[in-house]
Length: 290
Image (cartoon, rainbow, N blue to C red; front, side, top):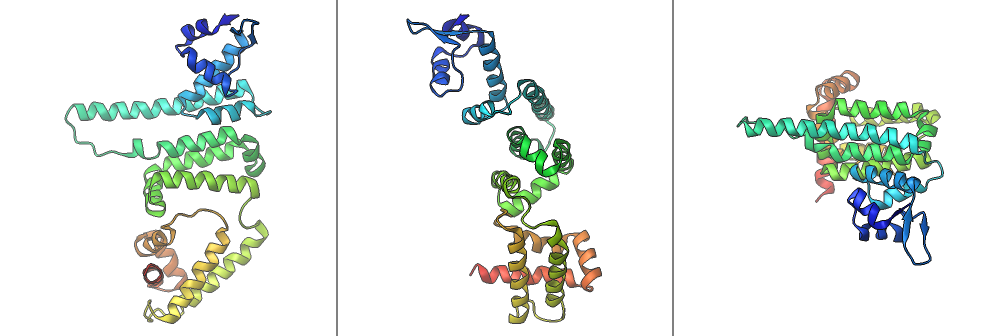
């Protein structure tokens, strides 16, 4: 058994911090003597080691406590996952070191992707560690969640660009995604699978109504009524999901500038339909912001 001072000397954590961990119920001594001395055995030190790994990964004390108090908490599995997250952190730090080396040599490097998505991917991995059971229940396996994260990382610059345009900032995007994931795990998708065909059909019906005459003024009352119906229906389908305060502005931009969006929309609703929809949405938003 080790005293609190010995543990402090071994780990570099101050005695006061160890006492604070005890006070909040995060890390308790194995035994407290009649004289009031805190004593720690090897099992307690293993717990402290786990806490330090979580702290290294920027988990808050509240989050660490919740994870470790979970009845499903598995130390061995946690160590494996912590190793995986630390490798991700190492790779990102290595990328930053390479960037600093280039800058130190006087090279002009306007690269920001190594900063941009750091908090977002950390939040995803934190979410994965704290909601493993729910993720498996909803998605079928943790591999499905990993595949999603890999896909986002493969399009990191595009994801960051979309996040800023739709949500105003990466911080807003990260918070919204955490909220949306929790919503999804708690209540499932906002629409059930059997409802999907009907919703697609309704969306197409409203879009056809909007694009029935591409020669109309996109700011006309008739067109704006059709836009309002389409936006209202889509928002209802999204339920309580946070799509970002600039979602429809971003959608308008896609209709106006995205080659893939333009090609698909024009093919389905007529040449010029994509630009028409984009302009109509912009007119709607301008009027709504007056």
